[in-house]
Length: 197
Length: 197
Image (cartoon, rainbow over all chains, first blue to last red):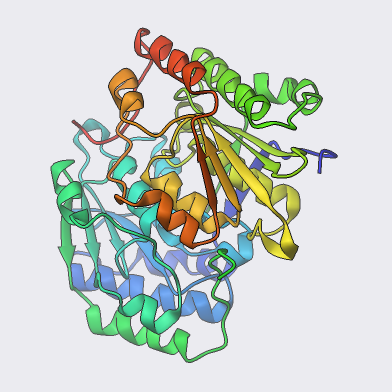
């Protein structure tokens, strides 16, 4: 294994998503239902395209809804287990804005995801500088319907966000999110958690 | 903000580390102290070089010590808050091996880090496919000495690893790790947690 150590890696959004960014940028995102509708739709397209799990995330200006970034889970396409939708959206937002702190200069950015983040993305959200997290749901339904392991979350996960200045909103677009997970679970798509279990 | 959505990002190891990879690859890594000695040394060099926090990680074959990847925290250099040492080492290992599951084909890979991972890297480790995690320590010393927020961890964090087939070893190279954190804390280096607190 010592032949060639990798010294860099790059990750890209799937081609279908890049091709559709003009259309996505034109969508109204003023309200929470509009924002989650986009996340749910991209999550559904993503697993059907074979890029990764049924998860999508967007970063928007919390007040105006101006779109800052779009992310989907590309674990299968990228070959990198950390490339969940939240990590993609947050990293692309940081690339677009040129800074590791999305909350710098008083910016109030919001991460919108089609379910509660897994434990990795929980931390990634916490360190990103976003000031708000909006999710369609938080329960065990996603694990039951899809087979993905979301990891052990601290019991007061939302309170830990709030204490760090990150507002949490739960429940918008819930039924649509469940439908995406149900369709994924009924398919033979790959559940990629690499735990050997 | 809708002028140009980013569609990809790339991350590289710092130049000083790339320049030294031949030397690093030649080091004996048969034992746990040898492995942690490398992690502690790279962690110390990393913050002094200004790339990011005082953290480093390596992925090795658990039995032989063959080096698979090296990572350091490059949050400041990359401008991406997710580029902690563990995410770098795990992603570069996955790039080198060409797969998102480091545990595929019966591989027994070990992640060696100079302290317990933050909550994000806890999840990143869990999803990576490594079969072992070796850390120099797990206590609040790193937060007290450096000022970094490590996030809320589940109380039985190690048991959650073990139940997923990931062995945990704590304590090797502990005093050297503390010395790195102490030196960082005594400096005026940037503590980059983006929580506005």
